[in-house]
Image 1 (cartoon, rainbow, N blue to C red):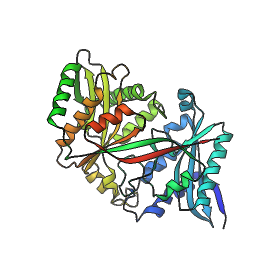
Image 2: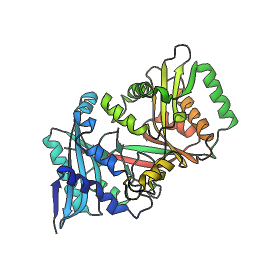
Image 3: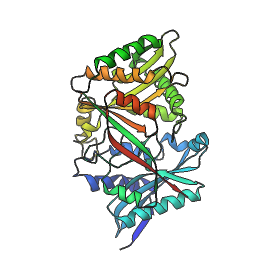
Length: 374
């Protein structure tokens, strides 16, 4: 039976596209189901990123049954900002079927080349503002919020499917029992006193402006990083609306210049809502999914440092250690927390990786990015 690749057209096809991982991994305890509505929103025609992204989705059929899926995206704003010509290839899910995976890859590459892309990069669904990376270790560790999980055989499908490794992304874990030594505490206190900086929490009453401050710093701090993709105001507002439901403002950290109030850096930490999603195996809010999420989204044992940015000009003023220490102190004050994950961090970001390791964290996950010349 040969593989047939069909484009995804219309709402019914999008629902079939979203359903595949539920069929493949429903019984795997390491897989955390996504909210179907969230995935449908991202691949739907009304998502604000569509203003500067052209996307296409496909499914692989064997004897009429969906055995794989993939998507490709040309982001004109990213290409202009980074002076690149990329296609982002993501939303990949597949049975352990080399023929199906190869056919999906070839389809995505051909479409991308026809659109003028010179290089395909993935997995990314669709850019680094979304979920990216192929998990290559720690397969028995469930993913935290907004990170990816895949079975081990995906590594063979990608590495043997015509892709080459381009970048690794690290996940760090800091357990509650991992405290600072007296020497480290004294060093941090000296840094704080000499820096002329102060640390504060986010202000939920000023939410919209806080979001603007955060993304201004995020863009300034990340603009030169590999794969950084700028976002429009509409995308930022769309994302902020979703995150507002689970944000704990105690874990939104701003570092400011004491004398001027200028924001020097910021860190965004989210409660691991995936812990609650373990019980929502259908990925649907009804009939009982909403109850599990409402009850458990902010009360799980873990948190994740999603983003940390330092404004240009402040990199030499130990802003990073001040943010990490503030997160550690606030996390320690929450008795239900057991661990904090910092992810993801580029493998070549020595300063960030070193600062996290100095706090006592252990590198425990790796996601891999691949490229293909078209």
